[in-house]
Image (cartoon, rainbow, N blue to C red; front, side):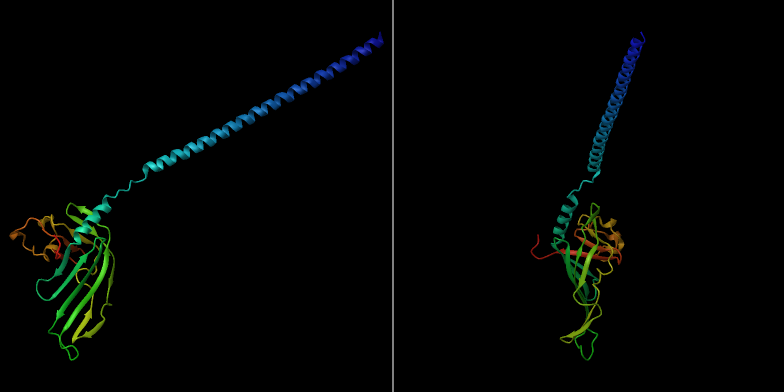
Length: 247
């Protein structure tokens, strides 16, 4: 009897060991599956985050493209047409009396060239019996015109070069040449361009006083009738006339 009891207890202990082993395996298996599920979830979240980031980048790119200003060629084309029209004219700044004047022409690309001179034939010396001439030969370029209103455009001087340095002197054929700044175009900060359709009464007095429109009470022309240049800083006004051969 005792022998059977000991054998039964031995078998019972084996059964307990088997049950304990099975329980541990189940726990380990469950833990492993749970870890795998969490890992899968993490991968899914990271993938979604990556997709969201790309979507955000694309959205931002689309927004950036939407707010980019549209560049039009209207202004450039209008400038080309304006300079093309101006290239047909000779521009003159003169007192109307005396012997001084500044003349210039403008190319279709905005480059201008001209000459200023003021002669004083009564001023003579032993080495210059034929008088004195103040002179300036120059070349420069206007910036692209900006439209101010229907009859006015604004330009700046991009650069200007003088052929002779200011205050240099030389005597040629009995005439003393003194090189100076180009009167009317010097010290310019802004140049206004008036079209022939400009109403004379709307133009500044500084411009009108140089272009035969001094007295508005005796005004015979409602519109300017020619292209004009106005140096705002020095209040110098250029009138114009068509070059020979231009229609």
